[in-house]
Length: 532
Image (cartoon, rainbow, N blue to C red; front, side, top):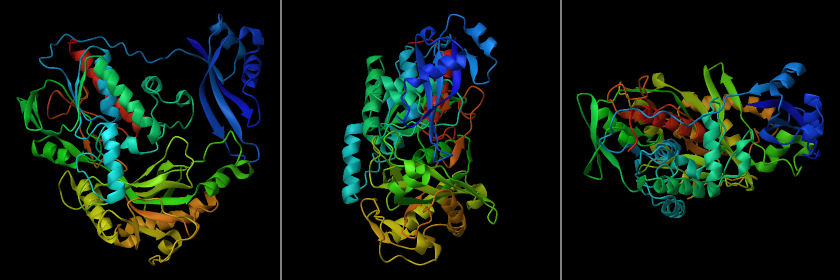
């Protein structure tokens, strides 16, 4: 049990040592009574750009906690008793074979970690390469346009997040988030991710973090196999019996399916064997690049270069009344780059990535419009996936092939003309780009929705609508195009023992929420079966 204190405010030039004095004043106790305290949250309040503040939430212990809190009668001060306890009571059923985890993105990684920590010695299979080999493969693709269909920005150790900003923000309120962040820190992530309001790791650090967690899984008795693709699931009487991996049959009682949002051939296999799925909404659009300095000034005003301020980010939303659709920024990468993220031949996908320092010249963000099942042609449960494929193929063609991206300046985009030269913003996308008209590779309503949002976003961040901002096509993988429906035990409603989880199953949206969902599934397996 601890005391939680919210809304401890400091100015940018204030020393952190003042926090203790502010706690003392808040609790009406002497400074000497405060033996130790922990910062559990640090956020930035930049609503008043002339008076930007750092706001803290604090935890501390005191011998008379309840008495102290009851005496104060302050809404910012409360007793905090809820902590995540990973000690799940093991079940009584016997596993005939060790649990198998498919996919080593955040959902699979943390599901396997939890299973390993509790003595279940999971087998983890990943179609892509380990993170070191994968990095070499991806770098080669960015330089040459030579795509590896099994190991790329989407597939491989760490999942798609390994080549992203490594954002750890989440909207879910679950104490398992604290466990995830703590394990990431134990594996080498910066300690500040446990309390920053908008934590991120960065692709450069994240690669080592996932490798360290993998090694921990192995040290606890688990096994990890790379370049190992799930090809088929065999079941009998509605229960999973075995899986086919690289042509070999492996017995399986419990299968954690953490496949990620881009394993389209796996979706097709699941559909073929009758696993119930539902099409779901996602969003598509472009990547937009601005000078990072402009975003800093837009968000921080005259304090933009203050040493305690990081590269500024943004989160923009707009509801187009004309189209009745949401338009929003997604996966914003301060001081980052736009990257080629294709996973299929002759289909082009862009994404954003930042290193931990976030110190490169441009900011970038997806600028996307919501799409849903009513927009997709046909009756197939995979019609959203085919919708993605259609526009990715158009983008590849419009970009001129070899995974060059179509690029258009914002001013030209707004005026329906192909760009002919750059302004002050240089596209960061590799392996290259071609000037194009985004109308040739995006639905009309997506183009119209983005146009409709720009004036609104420019009012929120001065300069957002600048003529020479760069649009890079196209962003399609904002989330999974399907949901693999599961029951109250978190199993597929079609096959007992099949546990779909994470972003690819339609139950998460980001690194932390995917990891938490993977943990939830692991807990269900633990509560059902005895350890090995």
